[in-house]
Structure formats: structure tokens, C-alpha cells
Amino acid sequence: MRATVMYGIGDVRVENIPDAVIQSPTDAVVRITRACICGSDLWPYREMPPDQAGRRMGHEAIGIVEAVGTEVRNVKAGDLVIMPFAYSDGTCDFCHEALQTSCVHGGFFGVGGEAGGGQAEAVRIPQAEGTLFVMPVGEDDALMPSLLTLSDVMGTGYHAALSARVDPGKRVAVIGDGAVGLCGVIAAKRLGAERIILLGRHPDRIALARAFGATDIVPERGEEAVERVRALTHGHGAHSVLECVGTATAIDTALSIVRAGGAVGRVGVPHYEETPASKQAFYDNVTVSGGPAPVRAYIEELLPDVLEGRIQPGRVFDRTVDLDGVPDGYRAMDQRQSIKVMVKP
Image 1 (cartoon, rainbow, N blue to C red):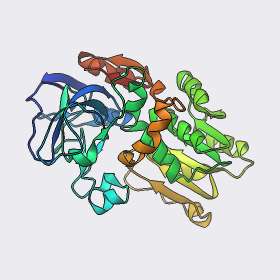
Image 2: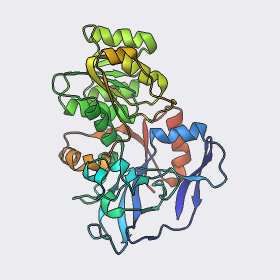
Image 3: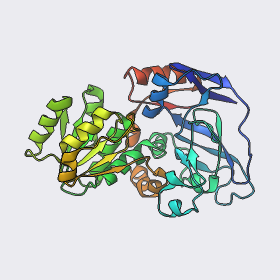
Image 4: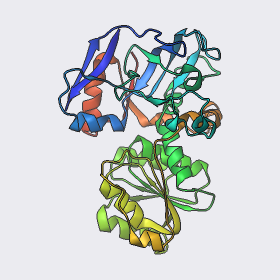
């Protein structure tokens, strides 16, 4: 079968690799019908040391189950399923607490180790019973983009909003105009935010953010951005801040624009050694929460809104490629020529 493999900075190839097969009674094999490139995939694209073995890429996918192991009972061949970016057994204490990303038998797709990547013709799914979500619909092209976001970015944006304690009537700031930040805008609107301030500066993303419910745009950065957000919030800052980037600058900005008693929900994969400590945040009783989103826990809640058209997170996809086009898809996202690229193997 064919799959995407990264060998180092900017070195993405589509190669023939051994077919995905059942290796454990808890496995399934899924034929991929939709996958995508994530903003977090750009970090290794920009920084990965040379690796002769390569890394199978992709952690967001939809597909058709082709085979299941003998211990898989709630998923069967022919099912259309969502593959969340983390696999989980569905039975451990953390899974029962809706924290599948900390499953004691779990892990992450597309980062090496036990599980392969979803930017491929097929993938083996460990812990298939607890991981895969069987969809109650057929393979409808019109729905696929938005359903695909439930494997990561929509659930991650929602996790940021929940971690930041977004509630009706609150003022919310979203840091980052990538796909996760844009889905964070959707989530904040869905949860009843009164004002949604997006910190971003790219016209195509700003237009989409406004369509999703953003009320204000702050293109400035650094201290200018902080001053602008505070001016928009009566000088107090935002009740809820969604940090969707993962840089030290982004988390510093988040802690500078959150109001006393407010909360920061951080979901950007951290690219700093330690969480910046803010003495002012301590004295202001600011809560900092978040982490890898347990998107498997959110699919059932968000799915009806997608099926009934109340939210359309699939609009973040502005380019579609086949497997041969994946390397160019990485280039386009890296150069900000595309918000998010969908892959149709």
C-alpha cells in the first residue's frame, strides 16, 4: 500500500510500504477515504532531524473498516468510521473519565511507535473497539469534510473552549487563525460567547472566522495586541482565552489578555520547555488548563450539529489533494497558501 513518510525537514515522500494487517485481536484495518494534514504536522516538517527509517504521517482520518480482530465486537467490516488522533481501549479509568488521550493502553497515530499514520491508503487501528466511532451515515461527500474535523481540529477547538470555561455572555479571545483557532471560534459561538475576538492577520482566515462568529479581529502582535484586546474588553481582558498556537509568545499573550478570575485553555502543541509562570496570573486567580484534546469523548456531542448543519467546520479545508499531492500540500500549508489540506487517497 502507499503511505506518507517524513524523513526530515521538508522531506515528505509517498512510498510503497507493507500492507496494514491485523496484528492483535484488538486491531482493525481501515481503508482511508479521507485524511488531512494538521498544523501540528508542520512542526516536524520544519524541525525534524534526518531519520533514515522515516516517520509515517497523519493522525486524522475517516475510512471503511476492512477487517477486525477476534476481540473487536462493536465495529465490523463495512462500517464507516472516524479515527480520532489518539487510540484508546475505552475501558480504563481515564477512558471512563473521558480522558482517552491518557488511556493506559493508548497512544497517538502518526508519531512513530505502535500506530502508523492516516495519510495513507489504509491504517491499522490498535484498540479498535475503544478508538473508532461508527458513523450513522453513508459516505456522503457533502458531509465528509466536517465529519473529518471531528477526528481532531473541531474537537480540539471545543476542548480549548471548555478548558477556558466559555459560557453564555462571556468575552472570549482566540489566539491563532489556523484550523484549530477557527474551530475554537465555532466552539465559543456554540457555547454562547457574547464577544469573540480572534487574534489573526490573514484575510482568508479572518473572513472565515467572521462567518463562524468572530465579532472582532486583532491583527496586532505582542504588546500592541494586548493593548487592543484590553481596549475591546473595558480594560479588564477576556473571560476566556483559547491558545491555539503552542509558542512561548502565544502563551505569554494569553496570560496577558485574560481577565482576573478568567481561564486560559491551551491546546497548541507546546514548543517551549516549560509553561511560563506569571506572578500576575497567580494574584489574578487565573486558571490555565488544556492539553491534547480527548476528541473521542466529544464526537457524539458534536456529531448532531454537523449532521444537521448547525456548524460547518469542514469549511477550514480549502485544498484537496490525492496521495501524490501530499508533499505539495505540506508546502502549501507551511507557506500559508492553504489553511488546511484534505487528502483523498
